[in-house]
Every structure is written in structure tokens, then in C-alpha cells.
Length: 299
Image (tube, rainbow, N blue to C red; front, side, top):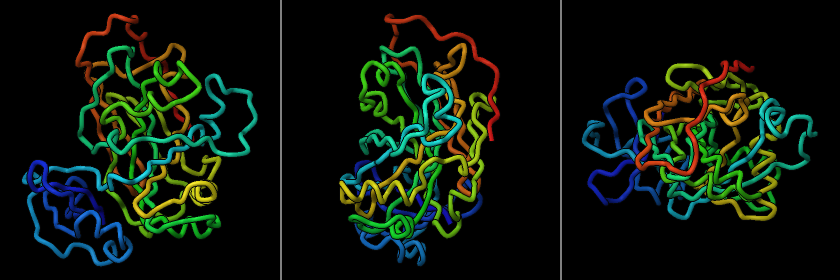
């Protein structure tokens, strides 16, 4: 089962709906309005669609995310990614690096992301997102993991120039539409990320990331438990679990996404997410990126 957000009319309310048929199927059936869904997501996911059905082309897909939701993200959470680039040789961290995205930066598959004017290009970060379905406060790791109701493919597309100018990553991680999400797949159909799901990212058909979630440093349960000891985690919040090795900025020469590049992130059991990058405005502040470097295939 796969669940998405929809609007039936421009500016209309967001509803959660079930995708039917094969991946990319053409039928969508309404499950619940957005607020109602996140008030009891486990029941709605178990029951599935109860409302009317539509052709996919008759609705607009949107992230099924509450406006008040928090998007917690983990940086440098794969051992091999931590070892590449400027962090090579550093010991693994004792605690996860947590940063945040605004919900307005999220998008859906088959979308377009514009390169900001001051950036050479954008960088890919194929990931898995966990959807929280219950409130958590000072939770144990087991209870935090049990609160996760689903997972999605995610691409944490990043403006490296803005990210690297200061010690804070907020600007580089919040380009409009730069956080596309795939459909929500119920947790029971996915299993534990520590058991290993294959995650691959391709740029224009070339594999640039090929890894397994068993390379995660901090588990979903441990990370949510840590967050819940400082910030109350709520139903509808998201956790982006981090990206594996193979990002563009760590390559020699550096490889960034330019005008017209297409990125596909494929996660086992979760599906494939496609995004196109465009340059909408001229960039006069920096030279174009160099040619692509050899492909990394990491497990």
C-alpha cells in the first residue's frame, strides 16, 4: 500500500489518498482529510481508502504533511559518507547531527527544483524518511521506533554553497521544493532499516550512490528518542535519516547537478523518486562545475 497527499482543486484542502495499481498507478482513492489522518494514522493506514476514487491526472499530488509538522534531519549518518570528503579520518560522532527543514521546502516526485542564482549547482542526497504517528516525550528507543507508521523515499537536495558558508546548514537545506518525498509505505511492509534496504541514486541514468541502510550510524529509534528528550515529537513529524556515500561535493572533481539534470532515488520496498533540476536565472557569481568524476558504488 502507498499513500500520498492530494488536492482535488487548486487551493483546496489536502487529503491523504491511497495509490492503487502498480507504482505510478493511475487510480487514487481518498483515505481521510489531512488533520483527521494524522490524528490516528495507524487506524487509517490499516483501513485504507474509504472515500471516492479519482484518476491520478484529475488531482494534484502534494506532500501529506501537516503545516505544523517538523522535519528533523540527520547529517552524516552513514559510516561511509562520514568517511568521505572533509570528515575523512574523524571519529564517528557520539550523537547525531540534527538539522531542520521547513515543510515549505518539501515536494513530490516528478517535480522540478530551481538552482539558486548564487549556486554552481545542486547536490543529490538519496535518503529514507520515517513518518512519526504518535506523540513522543522522553521516549525509549523501542517506543520511538514503534511510533513510526511508515517510510518514504526522499532526496535531500542541497545548495552546497549556502550550506558551507557558515556552520549552520539551514539555508542550504531549504531551497524551495528541494525535499521531494515519495509515497508513504506502511512500516509493516518495510521492516527495520537496520536489517538493510538497498538505496541507489542515479543522475541522468548513472549510478552515483549504491548503499544499504545497514550502514546507518544512528538508528531511527535511537535518533527519535534523543530528539524527544529535548523537543516533543508529534504525530505527523518526519525524520530524514541521512544519505550514504557518493554525494557530488565530495568527489574529485566535484560534480553538481546542472540545468536539465534528472535525479532518481530508488529505495528497496519504497520505490523510485524522480526530480529534474533547472537553472531559472543566470548565475554570474561563480564558474560552471567541472565534469563528472568516476561513479561510486558503495555497499
